[in-house]
Amino acid sequence: MIPQSVWKVRKKELLQRAGLEGFESFQELEPELKKALKAQYRTTNKNIDSGKNPYAKVDDKGKLKVSTPKVEKDVSYTVTDLFPKNRFISLFEVLTTVNRLSNFSDCFEHWQIKHNREKPEEKTFFAGVMGYGCNLGIRKIARISRNINQNELENTVNWYFTNENLIQANDRILKLSERLQLLSLFKKESAKTGSTPFFWRFLARNGYCLNILDLPSIF
Image (cartoon, rainbow, N blue to C red; front, side):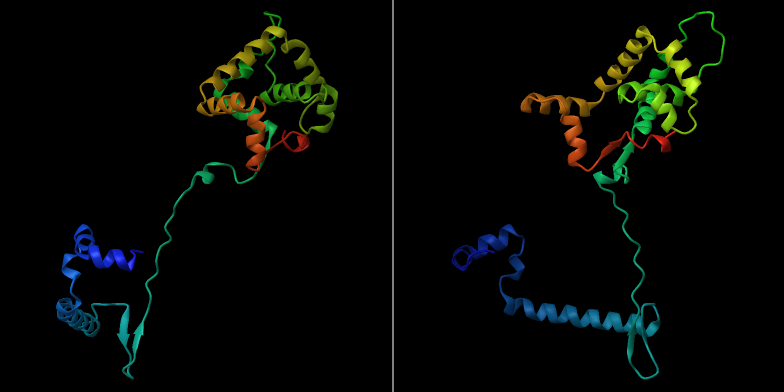
């Protein structure tokens, strides 16, 4: 609000800056407003009588009835709409997404060049990665997961999880992460705070959690 003292001294200047010079004197403005209002009443009544206005009608008793037109909801999106509504993200989903973008599972080749057997499914490689990465062990993750055969998983780990294959797979994931702008923000924040797990704190602060324990439901 403009203080009364300022309004009295700078009234014309303020009206001019706002483009409201014509509203300085209400005594001069009032007749024009009454004229415009009367003309609008005349137009509105004419539109009602002629039926041009479908939202206002006069009933047999002379009472005006107004029906409000249906307004379509404005569909607007926010940044939060970009994130999953379910704030529990399974590790299987994370690995699947990362593999789709980096194809790191292609690095797991049988260590015998002449091997012609069909390559195991991606979920078997993911189970092996989680078994070692989550320190659960291959037998335990096979036992608590559905649709994962323990013999097949053990065979896959023994013949495909060589040091060379693991390094190549890891390099692909690192190359992918280096292209993400979000990673640079994590690095900057970690440099400021002197800590490394900023990414996990970010997820936790925003209510997201990697669900690595609900293994039976992710295969």
